[in-house]
Image (cartoon, rainbow, N blue to C red):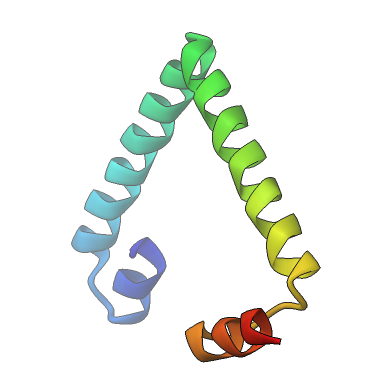
Length: 73
């Protein structure tokens, strides 16, 4: 949003957006350093990898109809 505000010619809004982005980055960094959020992110990554592997193994279906058609074979 900072870049968007700069391209729109609104430097005050760009400054507010930059400060807000810095605050969000700081909050994320502090939370990640506490340890437990890293475990949560790792669990989410593992679930995502497992779902991706199942999707690839299923032949990368594009929709529900494709999944149903392959299941009926």
